[in-house]
Image (cartoon, rainbow, N blue to C red; front, side, top):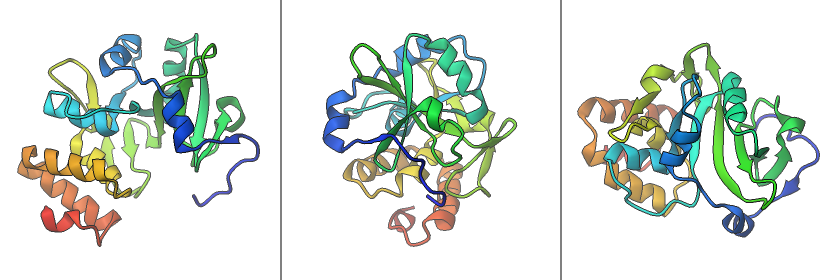
Length: 209
């Protein structure tokens, strides 16, 4: 992160995350957010399963994308929960760091149990146009960033999901790449190749594409 992290908050490690995460299903998220008018879509691993049309692996959490300025609509749809902001292995109350420009992950927490059920990515945008956090020259209208699957659940398009997965080099991301790329039409492969060459020019996936 280019900006200094805010004071306060507390550290959270992978073990604590595993203990506290009880992710909702995409169908339940869609049910709870049915009244949200801002564009939103399931992101990360679940978005690839929604693109494929079936569940291909277990998911330890669930993420959605929404324009940063529209986060209040999601919060209003889930009034019985509280929100925390997460970044660099730390957790802060949402109200303390909501305006920090580089902290975008926002976890929904059940007050009674302290369990996390949903991760909301508050995305940078210019009006109705999404701006990629990794490279602000990569932009799309939200109407193109998000598609509706056969189940009626909105999800982030696979080439954007794979672009973000490319950074971590985790086994599950490599497996997702191998599973999804053969299903992509040529225009999606070309777009992913172009973006990867910009953001991760030495990435091993480029040769596969």
